[in-house]
Image 1: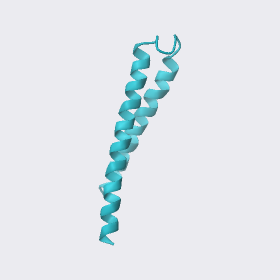
Image 2: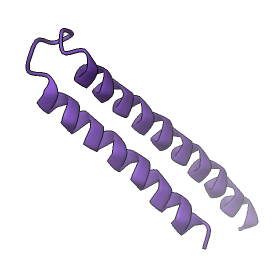
Image 3: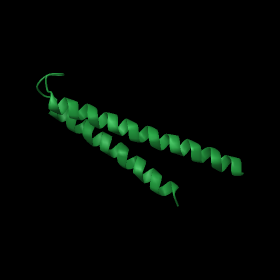
Length: 71
């Protein structure tokens, strides 16, 4: 039983790190689109906003998973 708990703990930590890094990368992609509109054309503000919100949500999900795992 103890081995299963340790295995889940290791996988949860990896999952949290992946969510955090993925959220940061998506936020940076949205910031790049917002900064330089010449990548996809003139109307990248909407796409950049959605990417930023998605990245922030992934980071928040990672934080929530971290707080629930610590109980």
